[in-house]
Image 1: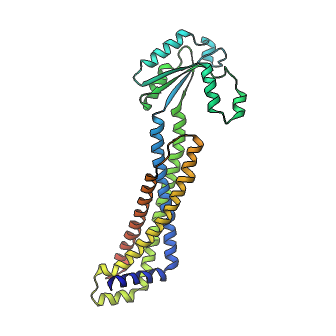
Image 2 (image 1 turned 180 degrees about the vertical axis):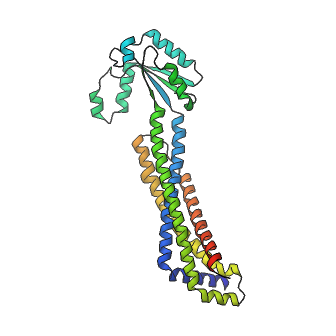
Image 3 (image 1 turned 90 degrees about the horizontal axis):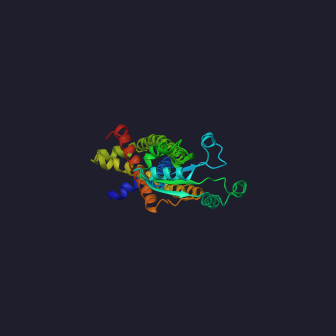
Length: 302
């Protein structure tokens, strides 16, 4: 009987405040969707950082007869002695795990393969435009400055390309997207909490006669509050489920697209997606339940 009474009270509350309940569900769904999207992006960024940190390299381009930099014009193209000295110094550094010398022919072939989908760029270049170089794999990605300083402005060195500079800009973009989503989500969660409190307060006011009768017949405080708490929890659960659909869409239509654009295999596992969805649903239920409880303590005199 008690369970039937609680369920009937929940149904009455939802029906009487249907518009407000729908508004709560929509607000919770949007805020949790943004929160979950921010968490997904954060996990994707972490996976990508780990992936690229193992592959970070520095490319040391050598001077050739066609080099235009002042340093190369003054000192001339790199000699065999220059190459040997640079390679020996790089291999002797503890920050370096591997050094590979790439000839001009190999560099040209690699350029054609990397930009095979950009015909105009390949046609505009010709063999000899890409100088021979050393590709330096770092043992510690954080020590790229030390390696770069060791070969910069040396005889035979034209320029140095550092993957870290490009990746920092890319990750800064993703971090900005993540924090923007989380910031908007926090604002939406605050709005949802206020809306939930207002809905529960109206529900308690509209049922003040029933709660007064329950108090007179000796019902406990918890028993009187339970229908309102469950009403809020159900709204949070429904909003969380809707948010889960948006989180799935974020994974398949945003994060997977980013991988396709940048051609790297760092796919976020479905386990991580389900974890974020689960956390979002739990947060939605807790948010609505706590907001309902705090509102009842203030407005429901029992």
